[in-house]
Amino acid sequence: MKQGRFISLEGMDGAGKSTHLAWLADYLRARAVDFVVTREPGGTPLAETLRELLLQQDMTAETETLLMFAARREHVAKVIEPALQRGQWVISDRFADASFAYQGGGRGIPMSLLQELEAFTVKTCQPDLTLLFDVPWEVSRQRLHAGRQQNGTVQLDRFELEAQSFFERVRAAYHARAQASQGRMQVIDAARGVDEIQQDLRALMDGFCA
Ligand code: TYD
Image (cartoon, rainbow, N blue to C red):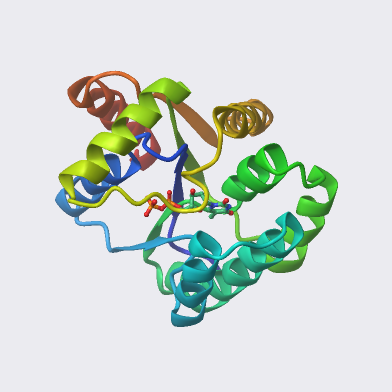
C-alpha cells in the first residue's frame, strides 16, 4: 500500500526546474516531510548508466524510447515504489510525461505505443502532482546557454542540441497532456521572475499539503 506522495517536475531544458526543485525541497523540509529527491533518466546505478548513453550516444528514436522506459522500470521498482511504501514522499526531476513530450511529441513515436510501454513499466505508479515549468523556446535557449557558461562548460547534450521545431513539438505535447490530466499537471509560467514563480508554488503546495 502506497503511503507517501509522488511529485514530478517537468519542463523543457532550461525552464529552471533545478532552481524550483531546490525551493520545493526547502519547503518540504520546513514542513518536516520525509522525502527523497531523484531524477529521470536515472535514479539507480543501472538507470544512471543508461542516462549517460541516452544523453551522449547517437541512436534511433525507437532505441531511445526503449532505453528511457527500461531506465524508468528500474527507477520505479527499485527507488520510487519502495520509498512510497515506506511512507516517504518522492520528488522526481522528470517522469513518464517527459517520454510523451520528447519521444512522442519531439521524435514522433506513436502515443499509443508509449501508453503500452507506460502500462508495462510504470503500471499504477503515477505522480499525485506534476509541476510543469513552461517557457517559450527563446527563453529556455537563453537560460540554457547562460547556465552552461556560468558552469564553465558550453557542451550541450543530445537533446539540448535539437532544433527549435523539436522543442515546439515537445512543448505542445506537454500542454496536451496537461489539459488531459484532470488537474494532476499544474502548468507554471516559468518565464517570470523566480520570486513570482515561488509565490505561485507556495500557494499550490499549501493546497496540496492541506
Ligand atoms: P534533464 O532533466 O533536462 O537533465 P539536465 O537538467 O541535467 O540537463 O533531462 C535530460 C534529458 O532527457 C532532457 O533533455 C529530456 C530528456 N528526456 C527524454 O527525452 N525522455 C524522458 O522520458 C526523460 C525522462 C528525459
